[in-house]
Amino acid sequence: MAVGFAVAAKSIWIALLLGTIFVCIYLPVIRAEESHLAQRFPEFADYARQVPRLIPRARATQDYSGSFSWALYSKHREYNALLGALALLAALVGKMMWGH
View 1 (cartoon, rainbow, N blue to C red):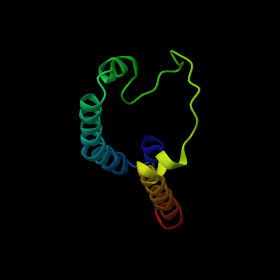
View 2 (cartoon, rainbow, N blue to C red):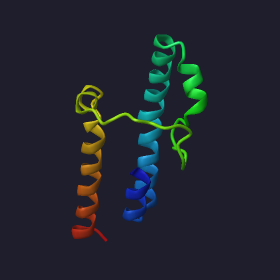
View 3 (tube, rainbow, N blue to C red):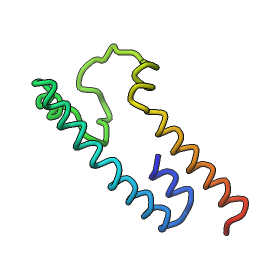
């Protein structure tokens, strides 16, 4: 999403800012989560070898029959991504209305 917002904003500064935010926030979170999962689940190492960390594969390697869970969405505070996307969207609208 951040790449899409950076392209839509047509600003190298916004792209650099979003890249910096990604590196400073998401990479430490990813490392902490992987460490926690490795300690809690012995089979996590096999899973991590099979599943890409950031960029998903074009095709699934196996069938998945899971379903979306609002409880997990809330528990893991995934709504923060939605709030961030809405903030970026508001910034783009502001740029279109008042920017150059």
